[in-house]
Length: 191
Image 1: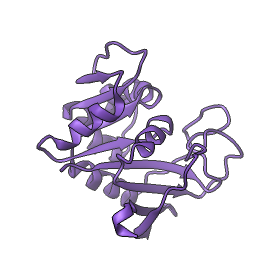
Image 2: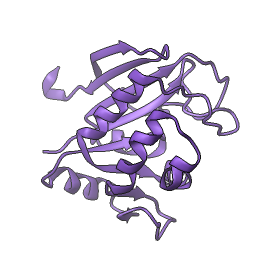
Image 3: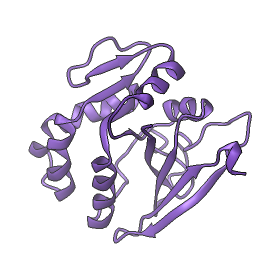
Image 4: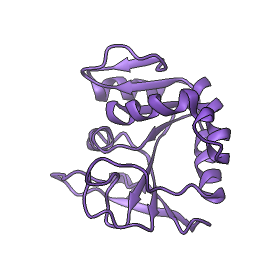
């Protein structure tokens, strides 16, 4: 069965964007870029919520014309050729997405996980991740903690009714002073 991998950047104070929605603070050094690319190598489909999708679709189709950063040059062609699924109740069509899913989140994602193929990479955001976490559908959480305090913005994890058990399965400090932690979901049978 395919896994869902959640890959997200956060500030030290636990925000995925700044008070005004800004996402200009992550620093993609060589080691963090390699980590991100390794996650992409494990995947054959990228998953996005509407908000993250809009940012990705505004940048990645023509990314090389806007930046010559090595990570951008390596990831842009991969982004364009990899199938992408956007989860949104309001978006009906997108230029770069393979598919839009707007209903039966749990059922549709469970079906995606049962299909043959590599893992599914969910990048950024909090609403879709919270919904998938609530259904027990995220298998791995890869969290890049950047050395910045944003003082506000969307929280990494939305408030929950139930506690979420995670197990630390790896961590590393990258050249950009970013600490990446990998957590696996603790299943009831693992306790």
